[in-house]
Length: 91
Image 1 (cartoon, rainbow, N blue to C red):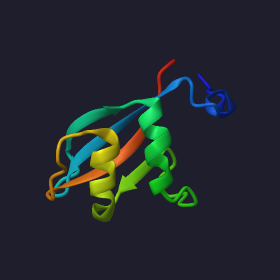
Image 2: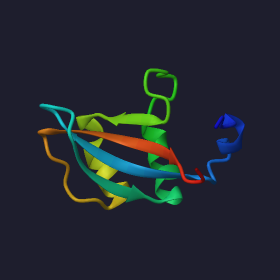
Image 3: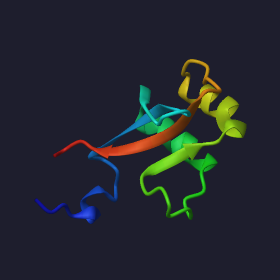
């Protein structure tokens, strides 16, 4: 099945999550849901010109305090790598 990327341009048929992976073995360690309103606020922290991670935004340690405040999520752990990931919800 082919998906039309234009279908998701308005970001209505997607969900966002703060996702944690183990820094040692890239094992998925956890997910924290991000609302559309939270994503709108937190996206200003990311460099969208980085094409290496389409729909996946690395949360660098220097952004952690701002991300924790905006998302009201638990403290982030130094032995994990964090990303804001976007997933289609209508498949």
